[in-house]
Image (tube, rainbow, N blue to C red; front, side, top):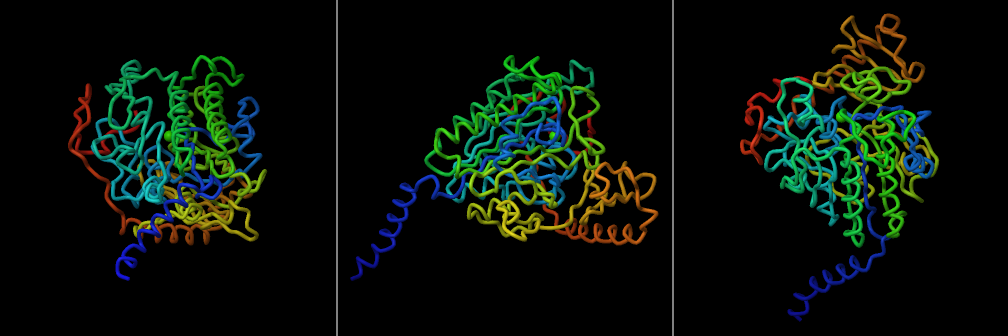
Length: 470
Ligand SMILES: [Ca+2]
C-alpha cells in the first residue's frame, strides 16, 4: 500500500497539469491588458467628447465595455501614479509620493511590494511590460525585478533625454531604450516608440497565447515632447497632439486584433487609462481635461480624474457607463478577484470593484472616499461622495475650497463659507486617514549601483527630492 500512497500526490499533480495544459482559452483565468498612457487628458478621446481627435478603437472598447467617468489616479504626476496602479496603494504608503524619479536618482519602488505583475506571475501568467516604466532604473528596480518576465521600453520620461540640452534647461540627461536590463539604444527615435512598443506587445501575446498573460503597455506618449510616426503625423485636425493620440488608438486596435485572431477576445480584460491629466504649458502640444479644471501636477480634477475604459466581452456589460467613484488603486484588488490572484499580507488602500465592472445589481464602489496628495506628496484634500475639499497646496492657498462635484464638475463654485461644517468634517477625516498611512508607510528601495555611465549629473545624488520639475 505504501508506494501507492506515495504516488497519489504525483498522480494528482499530473492530472492538474494535464488539465491546465489542455484548458481552453475561455476556461483559463482571464488575460489582463492595461494601457496606461502618459499625461493624457480627460477630454482627449472621442468617447469622452473630443470633437476632432478620432479614437475608433478605444471608442469601440467603450461601446463593447464600460466607460468610467469618476476614475481617479492617485497622484497628478508620473512615478507616484504608476506606483499606485501597480501596488493598489496610495503612493505615500509605498514611499513613492515625493514627485517623479529623475535620471540621477537612486531609489525606486521597493521590490518587497506586491505588484499586479508579481501577483499574476505567481498564478502562472506570462507577464510583459512594453513602454515607460518610471519606478526606478537602478539594478533591481526595473520591470524584470518587479514581476515582469519581459520588458521593452524607456525607464523614465521621454523628455529626460538630450531634449533638455536642446532646450538649455541645464539638465544633462540621456534616454536609453531597454530590453530587460540591457541598453539597446541611446536616444531612440521617438517617432517610432509607440509603434515599436505595440509590436513588442503583440509579439508577446502571440508567443504566450496558450497560457494566461498580463500585458502592461505604459506608452511614453503623449508626454511632452510628442512624436508620431510618419503613418500618423499630419493626419489629425487636432494637430500633432491629435496624431499622437490617434497612434495610441491604433496601438489599442492592434492589440484588440491580436486577441481576436488568437481567439482570446472573450477571455481578456482590457483596461485603457492614463497616469495623470494633460500637461498644459505646452499649449496645443498638450492635451485637454475637457470640462475639468486644472492639469497635470495639480489637485484640480483635471490633474487626477482621467479617462478609463474597460472591456471584457460577455462579462463587462457592453455600452455601460459608471459614475461611481473608482480609483486606480482599486484595479489590483479587482484583478485579484477576477483572476484568483492572491493579495499579499501588506495592507493596501484599494478595494475590488468587480461587482461594478460586471454590472451586478446594486454593486457599489469599493469606497466613497479619495485622498488628494500634491505632486510632492503632501496631503491636500479629500473627496467623499459628491463633496471635494481642498485645504492645502497651491489650489487652496487663499483658504479651504469646497465643491460639490456632481453639480460643479469644473470646480467653479466654492461652498467652503456656506458649509463650514463640511470643511471641518472632511478635513478631520482626511487627516485621520493620512495619519494611518503615514504611520504605516513602507520604504522605497535605494540602490547604490548603476546600470550605465551617466553623461550628466552625479548618479548617486543622496537627495531624491532636491530637483524640481524642469
Ligand atoms: Ca505622466
